[in-house]
Length: 385
View 1: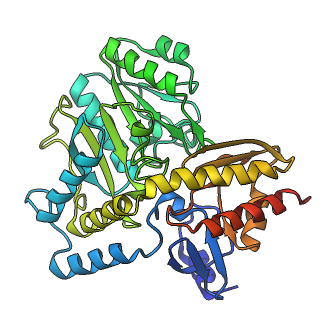
View 2 (view 1 turned 90 degrees about the vertical axis):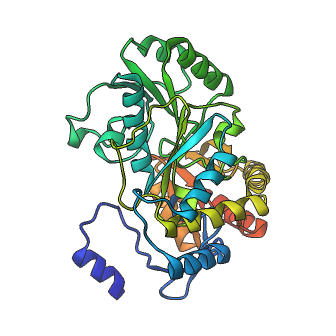
C-alpha cells in the first residue's frame, strides 16, 4: 500500500468510497498515478476540468493573479471580479443580468433558495425525484437522495417525477416559491429533460408566478454542446446555479439572477466568494472554452462516442443517454465492478446511481483517446465479471 493511501486512511474523516488509486498529475484528458501508470480520464474531477487538467492558460492566469492579489472581500470592488461578472452575464441566457459568486455548487444552490424566498416571501419548493442539488442542509432539502440520516430538513420541499408535467402542476400551491430542476439529471443517472416538458415548466411558472431555478452545476460550461444547457433547450430560468467547470478546477460557484430577483444586500455573503484568484481562473477558462469552441466539440464528440458504442453494443447495456459529453450508460446489473475493471484497463469513469456508468471527459479530450475509451468499455462490458 502506498504511503499516500496509508496517510489518508489514517487521518481523513472519510466521506467518499475510495478506489485504490493515487492520482498525482494531470494534463488535458490524461491522468497519472504515483506508479507512473497512465489513464484516460472520463471523470474530469466529476465534470470540473472541462478545459483539461492543468490547462496552461488557466495556470498562467492563476500565477499572474497570485502575484498581484489573491483575496479581496465583497465589501470592496475588484477589477478581476468585475470582469468575470460581466463575462458571465454576456454568455448566460439573456434575461440573467446579475451574478453572485461563491465557492461551490452547494453554495450556489443555497443562495438560489434564499434569493427565491426573499423575492417571493414564500417557502415552498418543488424538485424532481432522482434530483441532486448539493449536500448542505438547504441544498440537501431540495435533493431526493442522501436525506434520511439528516432529517428533519428545511420544511416546504416536495418532489415529483421528472418529465411529468401533470404531477408537477398538481404539486404547485399558493406557497410555492420556486421549481428547482436539473436540465440533465447528473447524479440521478444522466437523464435529459424532454424539451416540451421544459417549455411547459416555464409556462407553468409564468402562469402561477413561481420562479424557475435551473441547476446547471454539472451541465454548464460547454458540457452539453452549448455553453449552458438552458441554451441547448432555449429555456430562460429566473435563477441559474453554476459551479464545477467554471474555473478550470479551482473551487468556485455562481448564482445568476434576473432583474426581478430581490436584492440580498446585507442579507447574504461569502468570505471567499469572488476572490480574485478564482475569478482569474474562471475568466481564463471561459475564454478558452469560447476560443477553442469546446461546446461544439462536446456535441460532435459525444455523438461520435454513442454511435461507436451502439455499433458494437454489448448485451449488458439497457440504455444509453447522452447530451454533448455527458454520457450515461445504464446496465442490467451493478456498475461498480465494471468501473473497477475499467480502471484496471486505464480508463476512469463515474457511477450515477447503482447501475449507471457516467462519462464526463474533459472537453479537450482527443478523439482517438475517447474512441479508445469506448472500445475498452465495449470489451469490459462483454466480459463476465
